[in-house]
Length: 340
Image (cartoon, rainbow, N blue to C red; front, side, top):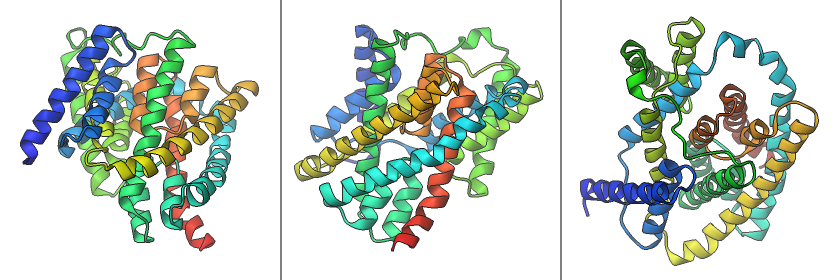
């Protein structure tokens, strides 16, 4: 099957999943619906595919949404976040100390694969570093995808069932209610920020570039709104599909070994995240919702979606995730080289 029909099939599967979740009143229908529908289709052997330029464009929407949440009032609170941010390096250390032995000794992966799969963040960079060190890129990709899949599936259910948060409501104001010129500036900030960040080699360019440019516009009072609900729902749809599509072509042997190991590793990280979130709450560093979303070891884009839809403190949560990814990307290769 050529690429275009595979992309069309993926869109159809994702749309069907979103409609089922929407009709059933399940949480995050435009994220979880496409994600789980594509996962099931991939496990059934369907040949799915996504178009990277389009999915990256959708990620810029989340970058702009986060950037517009950074206001002068938020900047004035940065000092309050210092103690909470100081927990992030310790959180990553505990994740590595617990995750690496599990993947190396229990699951039986080689050292580079186990080490770079145990790092909770920076998927593309971990795959690059791990492959250069002699690791298995397929196994690393599936292990990271499984971590994100489990966190992004279970966390909304906890928010929905435990805290009673409505995750089916529109994630913002409709486009018809926003100034056209502001939406045009948001589009410019998204595309220009992405291109500039990509040119200078910034990690996570499709999110962080738009985030920085939109934050500048927000802090100067040029933009005062978040991207419209329709744009954020579209971003959810494509990001959800990407997670499910990663399992395309998975074999039964990979399901038995890699998927099982990934589920075990994600469960370990989930417990560690819950402990650190509880520490942050106990010391009065953050409310429970913000704490659990800040330390949840999911993907940066997926956590941004959850924070937006749940109505949480977006700046607090994304600051923690950006710091987590920076530490992982900068520190992981240095630590691996030292251990070797």
